[in-house]
Image (tube, rainbow, N blue to C red):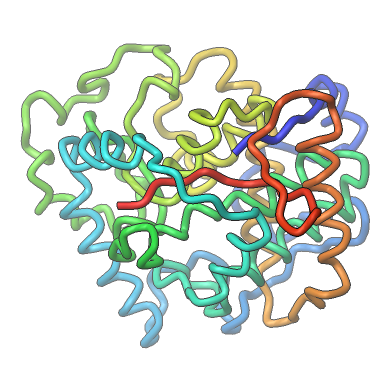
Length: 329
């Protein structure tokens, strides 16, 4: 996928102008009100607090079973194999909007906060960002495409099991931090007692940079590979958001900061802003897809083809389409 974008304003300036805190205690989360009238709700679509993995319910029991399977199977060798296979990007041409609509068939089994089709979440996130950051169209587009890697659930892309596509992500090749949800299930992971992987740094070094770190395999890393391999010109903050938006151990518990470099530290500021919209915009209130579709189609065309540079695109019936090149298993 090639998306041509201008760099965002300097981080410090943007954060100061918006007056949005990037670091705060968890007990302040529910008091956060973002510019543009987007207020963080007290409860999720089920009437529970957000990301509450301990409350007793049928939904929570299925979520814990998901994480048990995920934590047992997400090993360093598994991730290395999946990156090698899916990094080949055997081409499947599909417009960005077609890819969004493909996700209409799926519900994220790892999500304790929503059981709506994924296209609803994409639009809810993008629209909430658009209200508060009307001039940051690169961020609107990031909101729209951040979960497109979930097409891995579709037969066209290998029909991977949910534990290999969705859920919180975490580094492999080093110790599993205790802040990771349902951490207890890592004890059954073959890497848990592997002397090469069980230390704080494992196979990595201090300040090596998160781009050098293998993350548990799923839609985040896949979409990141798609963007990188197609030489996407999303700003580095956009790519960072795509790869680490499910890395809650980092942006909620500040775990694994010892692996970050200076660029990661700057990009984390944007990710913490993005996370509020990704998490708290989830709602049973449906987006009028036909009403907002023209804006996002024009945004895709503007940002992908409006800079006079080469992009991955095709023409069908005289209409210019922007394409994502993704791998077929």
